[in-house]
Length: 365
Ligand SMILES: Nc1nc2c(ncn2[C@@H]2O[C@H](COP(=O)(O)OP(=O)(O)OP(=O)(O)O)[C@@H](O)[C@H]2O)c(=O)[nH]1
Ligand SMILES: [Zn+2]
Image (tube, rainbow, N blue to C red; front, side):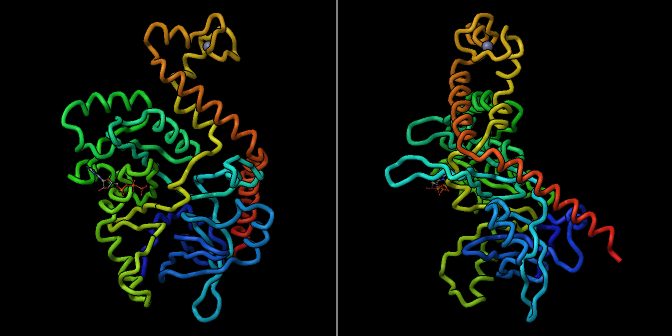
């Protein structure tokens, strides 16, 4: 099967980053030291070249991850090797935090990239969950994660068909929790809002869907992918894996271009480092804070606190301030546990790689 890479997000500016003598491929899945990539001539399973192995031995952030664009070099017999990960435009990075058997948390200072080059982050929050309404605090948290990744959040209030009345009021509340972010109601069941969501993928953009279990993420992905998912299953059936094997695709190309990344890692997103993301979600509080008497005001009981005044006057919902406190604490906690070097290394590493590639580009015959 042939792929039109431009439908997978390949662009001229990406092409300029590709070293001579290599071909591009997009990582659709990784496991056990190898990746599945989609190249123009089809899907391939590829091993990592020496350069990738060396870099990732020092730092797991250099490991290929789903969504990466990679430079592949050709081996005999039509096989490829993954030579280089092209610069990531966005990345979901998780600090090396794991839960031990006793439920405690430990950080090993090693980050991990869960997904790369995600343009649009759909934050799916059910309009109703059991008997509860949409959880605004959870929306704030996931929108912060989305900003932190470098992608653009879009909030989808799912299962909107469960609401007969009051949906507009609910959407208005959700908008206060996500200032500056598009908010839409979606019912995958009725098909409402699905085309609106698809619109965000125009121009071959890549999306993920974040949200709690039962939010309707899979149902939405299926509604968006439609025939696309069927097609990938047929391809899989063709390679002898049996028709009825459920294949969990992690990078799903949509029929009209655009892609959805759906990985267990992204689904289980818990804690990330997210200091900047929190600031963006609480832009209203940040702005009010400009009027506080003290620069380092904690908006608690400090005199001349403009944030407390706004709560008192009803301008700022008390819930927002509580939510801000909670996420601030979490972000500080994460920052203490995530190797601060990680991000710096990540940035300088890409700078060096960029420079190397530019030099290589100039020396092209
Ligand atoms: N009423 C209604 N139910 C929906 C809608 N979308 C999904 N559901 C139902 O909600 C349940 C959960 O949907 P999923 O798509 O599996 O949810 P998920 O977010 O993928 O859940 P996890 O896989 O656990 O993360 C299923 O029973 C769906 O049929 C919708 O638009 N309206
Ligand atoms: Zn203050």
